[in-house]
Every structure is written in structure tokens, then in C-alpha cells.
Length: 486
Image 1 (cartoon, rainbow, N blue to C red):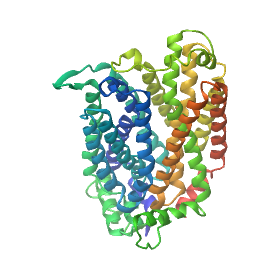
Image 2: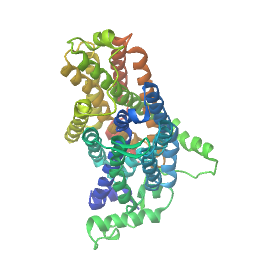
Image 3: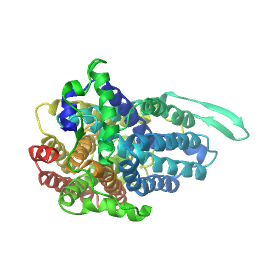
């Protein structure tokens, strides 16, 4: 009986894996369009839907609350019904909800539809990385998952450019206007539609089948993978494989109601031998998410203030003198000058993911994460002194981009530290920690930035330092490989 990871070593990274890889890139691009493109959609729709700062807060809180509430359930369903099936169901509902949100005539119906998008986006966000990793041999996983992350950078460049280029204003009926923001939402759907058509023709993860004792189905998927990768004349039997297994299979399950099942099936993550590593990685994800997305939203407002004032002072001096009046972002008609910082952000994200690919050829994941977090901590400290708008932009990008680029590596560590039947739930719970980090970071900035600016930036630098120590406490990759094989 062969270990499934040994079988993947025989099959290599062939046509089947490349097809799954392209599908996952498109899914990642669509997830980024929906999550990070929402800020541009809201800015563009502010006039049509009468979105002020209070309504903006309601909308963002609703979206993040939806993701927090749904993530654990989606992670459990990924382990229960399979990664592919969950992505097909939740992805289809996400596309439908997003499509309907583009047609909503007023704010509150728009908020409800975006809340539903937040619920359903949790499915692909939780399952995609696990699905791809379970078709990839251990040694290639960090590199392949990092390549998928290129889609984040491309999406963060393309969506702002599209928002600035399109100019649509068609009166449909009475005061209902088909505006640019509606078209932007529809264009954002394209990678998702393509991805889920591809996913429909792809197989379920054989590791999932093994985790639910469907060994025959797992062997059939591997046989198909062998035929596609090696040619019609090659079979698993010809490679000496007649049956497969994997370590750390799940034990017998007891039928319970939904809430009880969620608790009991997640309980192993809170017990030895997984609890220590789970909480260490979740703590790092909390900081990485909070810094990348919580501070990232405020970066645009602070940059807009700096460009308006045109004074060569430090960030905290400018906020103290002008922050009460000039921190609102432009809305309604977005032009290139309004979205250039978002484009720079996307370019730097893409550059750092490409750099990560090269670093993975000569360094371990943990080393790269530590390098990125230390760079962000140093830049956070430099926020106390940085002057001139270009230097401030560079410092901000170094603070918020390395954590987002190391986030995928941190989650890949978590995937390798837990068995197959717990991976969906582990990633989902870690993402809940991350989204809670965004809410905490946003509240922290909102309450401290104007009156205690230095405390804000030094607080973030301290949080990154804590995350760095947490990553150091995780097992080395050689120990992880031993755990995977035992």
C-alpha cells in the first residue's frame, strides 16, 4: 500500500495539476476582486447609493461580520462534503449575490447582497488553498501556493485601472441609472465565471476521499491523474501502486446536530498535539491580516491628506494639524489620479510575490516570513520619522505589503501541521482570527490615530515583533516533513 504523497512524487506536477493551478489562480483573482475591489465599488457608487462615512462603516462591518460568521461552517463543510463541491456551491451563490448587488437601486438592499457575498466568499477562500495543496507533493506546495498569489497582485492592479477607465451613465428607468460601479461589479465576475466552469470538470481531492474512507474513489482520481500526466498507456498498476493511504486519518464519527458537530470535530485543534501550533499560526495570521487590510484601508486616507496638504512634515504632525478636515477620500467619479496609490499597492504586492518565488528556491518558508515581518516592523518604526510624500508611500507599502505576501506562507505552514480531515476547519478558524485582526486594527487606528499617532505606529511595530517571535516558535520544516510522513 503506497502513501499518497509518494504517488504524487511519481506522477509529478503534470497537466492535471497545471489545469487545477490555472483554475485556482482564477478563483484567487475573483476572491480578490470581490474583497479588495469593494472599496473602489463603494467609492464609485457613493453618489448613486448616498454612501457617507456612517453607511461605509455599516457596509464594511457587515461584510467582515459575514465572513467571520460563515468561515468556520464553510471550513467544516469543506472537510465534510469535499473541497470541490463546497467551492462549486458557495462560488455559484457568491456570483449570483454579487450579480444581484450590481442591480440594487438603493443602499440597504445593496448592503444585504454584499453581506451574502461575504458569507459565500468564505467557501472558496477556505477551500481553494487546501484543494490545490492536496494535489501537490509536499516539496512543491509553498512554491505553487505562492504562484497562485500572483493573482492577488494582478487583481489589485487591474481593478483600479478598470475603475478609472470605465465611464458609463445610462438612464434605465426614472432615477435608476446603470453607472460605472455596476459595470465594474459585472466585470469583476469574469474570472469567477471562468474558474467555476473549469472546476465543474475537475475531480475532488483524493486526500479528501481517503479522509472519509472512500479509497476506491481516491484511487480512481489518481488513476485519472496518472493517465493525464503520463499518457494513456501508463497506469498506477504499472508504477507498482495498487492501493493508497495517508497518515493521520480521521477516526470514527458520531452523528450529531450541526452546532455539536462543529464543536466536536474542531475540538482536536484545541487539544494536543495540534493546539500549540494552531494558536501560534493563528496569532501570526491575526497580526498579518490586521496590518495588511486594517492599516491598508487607512493608508489611502492618510495619503490623500498628505497630497492635499503638500507640506514636508512627518505623518503624525500632518494628522494632528489637518486630520479633522482633509481625510475623506474622493468619491463618485474615479480617475487615475484617485487610484494611483491602489495601483502602486498592487504593483508592490505582485513584485513581492515574485520575489518570494525566487527566495523559496534557496530559503525555507519560515525564514522568508521572518524576513518580511522584520522589514514591516522596521518600516512601522520609520513611520514616526518619515517625511515627503514619496518616502511616506514607500514606508507605508513596506509596512502593509510584506505581511500580506507572507500570509499565504503562514497558512501553508498550518496546512502541513494538521491532518487532512482538520485542514478546512483549521484554515477557516485561522481566517476568522485574521478578520478579527482587521476589525481590531481598524478600531485601534480609528481611536488612536488623531490623538495618539505615535502610539498607533509603534503599537503596530510591536505587534509585528510579537508575530515574528510566534513564527520562530513553530516547528522547523524538517520536523514538519517527519510529521507528514508519520
